[in-house]
Length: 366
Ligand SMILES: [Fe+2]
Ligand SMILES: [Fe+2]
Image (tube, rainbow, N blue to C red; front, side):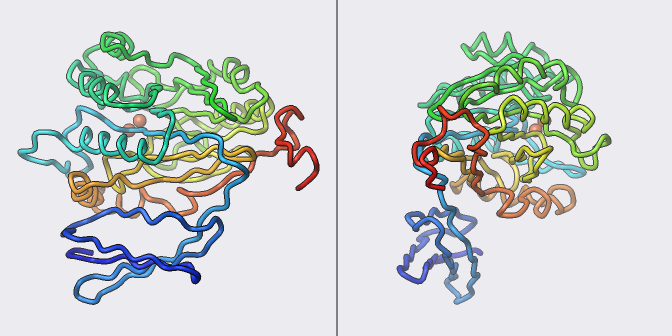
C-alpha cells in the first residue's frame, strides 16, 4: 500500500492505532505488547480509505525467557545484483543492497534484544578482499558477539582469496568443522557444511563431532548453511545435503540429544519441516524478498522462532522490487507461510536428563 496510512490493531480487549506519517512506499511496523496467545486483528488503512485486514495469533512462551539470540544467512556482501533470468540492479547507488540490508538487520536484531548473532553462511558472495572488507566493517559495527560459519559462496570458484585466512586478516575467526557455544539454557552447534567449488553440502565427515557436540544436558540448536534434503535428488534449487546422508545424520544427532532443533540458510526461503523427528527450518536472506533476519527466544521449556522483516526506507523499496526475480515467482516462493516463520517448540523434556528439567516440570505440574 502506498501513501500515508495507519495501522489499527485490536485483540478485543484493547486497541492500538499507529499513524505512518510520511511513508510513501513500503514500510515496516512493530506492534508489540499483546498478551501471549491473543488473537489480534490488524487493519492497514490507506489515506484513500482502502484497507487490508490481517489476523494473527501471538505465540505462547514455553516457560520463563532465558536469552534471545538471532541468526542471519545469505548476506552475499560484495554482490551488486539479484535474480535470474534478469539480474535486478541498482545503478548509481554508493552502498549496494547487501550491505545496506545487513546493517539494518543488525540494528533491528540488536534493538530486539539479541545477545548473540550467528551467521549461517554466504556472508560474502565470493571470497574477495573487497567483500571481506565489507564483512569486517559490518562485524566491527556489532555491539554483540558474532559467530560465523561458511556457506558455499565463501568457497566458490569466483573466490580469489582463502576465506579463513582473509577473514583472519580482519580479525574474524570463522568456524571450522563443528563449533559449540554455550548460552543460558541452550548449546548452539555450528556445522561447516561447505565444500570448495560445490553447491552441495557435506555433513557425513562431521557426524561424530556433531554427536559429541550435542551430547550435553541442555537443548541444542544446530546451525548449518546447507539444508537437509527430504529426497535423494534435489526437488528445488539450490541442492543441500542429500537425504541418504541427511536423514541418518539427523537421527544420530537426535539419539545423542532428543532436545534438538535445526536451522539452515542457502535456499533464501522460509520453510519448516520435521526431519526424522527433528524440527528443522530454512530461513531467508536479509537482502532479497521479503528480506529477513530470525530471532530465537530461548525459554526454560522450549524455543520460539520469529522471523522479522528488515526495516527502513533505505532497504524496503529494494526488497519489494527484488520480489520480481525468477519472473515474479520469487515473491510467492520465498516467504513460506506464517507458521513456517514464527512458531514455538517445546523441548521433549521427559527425555532430558533430570538435572535439566525445570523445577515446575520436575514437580509434575504438567
Ligand atoms: Fe545464499
Ligand atoms: Fe548458499
